[in-house]
Image 1 (cartoon, one colour):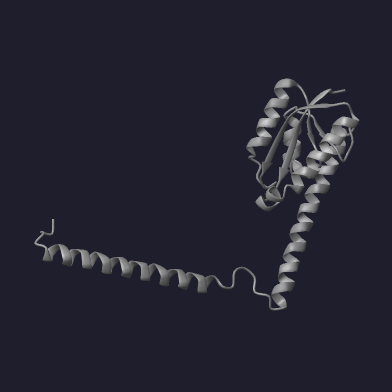
Image 2: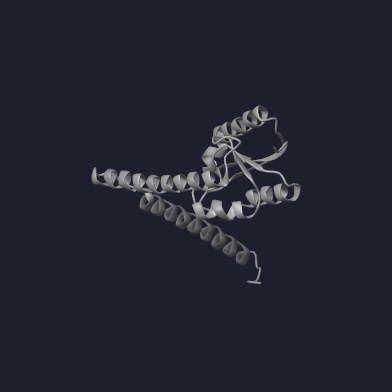
Length: 186
C-alpha cells in the first residue's frame, strides 16, 4: 500500500474560495483519511476552477508530480475531479492512481467508473433542476438577470457626459486665458 500521497482540493467559485469552508472541509476529510490509513501527504494542490473546465493547471501539476514520484492523488470526493465519466477515465488512463476519501482506500477502477457515471448523472440533474427553478420563478413574475441594468447604463452615460463637458469647459477657459496672455496656439 502507498505510504505517500498528494492531495488535490478544488472549489468551483470565488465565493466558495473566500468562505474557505469548501476547501477546509475537503482538507479535513483528506487528512482524516490519510491519518486513518497511515499515509503521509507530501504536497497539497488547491485551486478555484469550475469542474466543467478540463484544463486545470493545478490538477495537471498534481498529476505530473504524482506520476513522477509514483504515488497517488487523494481527493475528498470524486466530483472534485470532475462530473464527467470521459474526463475521469482519461485521468485514470494516465496511470496516476486516485484515492477518494468518501469511497475508501480499496476502491478499484471499476467502481471509480461507476461513481463517475453517477457524478455525471447528478450534474445533468442539477442542470435540469436549475432550469426548472428559473422557469418557475419567471412564471411567477420574478425578473431574472439584472433588471436595473438599463438604468445603471443610463446613469453611467450621464456621468461620462458631465465629466466630458466639465473637462471641455476647463480646456476652453485655459485656451482663452493663454490667448489673452499673448501665447500662440502652439
